[in-house]
Length: 240
Image (cartoon, rainbow, N blue to C red; front, top):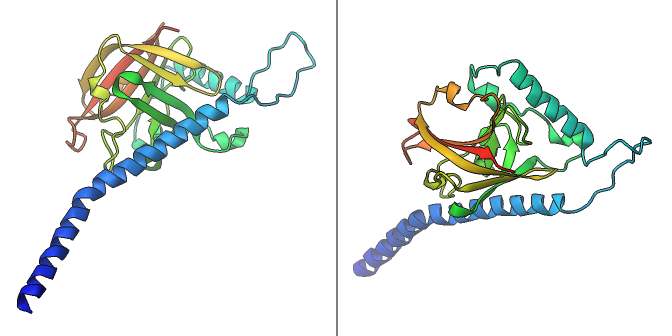
């Protein structure tokens, strides 16, 4: 009888240990799957034509979500004209620059970030909040919005792995010449990696707009599982 009790206890301990070992793997699988589904849902949405109110002026071009496009372009232009306000606190880059629900969009995904070399395809949210970073990649507010244009530097942040999910874990494997794309509501922006660097967490100058350039910067923690002692940047320049 005593041996049976010991055996049962050992099996319980073994199963508990196995569950603890497998939980991060299973949880990571689910998180990666959810991010992938959000990305695919967005891509399906932007590939489905929507009806737009036609302008009475036949020479005036209309595009989906015209008001949002116009206001985002103005935001990027003002950001450059005002020499880009420095980040004083985390709230500065967490607060979304736009509420997409106000413009008729059904969810918070604004774009999809893709880097084929590292099998990365993630939804992009506006505002680097904890919730957004847990579900995908996030645009850092007070940096250029991911719509392209001269004198822009769009900074997209992501966790270097999150509760078992990969997220930006392999972003440092990107090298000069690799291709990164952003598919937003209107078009696909294609960038090529031109530089990688490691910076201190408070080195905001490294992610500022550079005059005359059209940049996309991917930002994640470094080294891996270090608690964010440094930041790893992948700097990309638009090619088309």
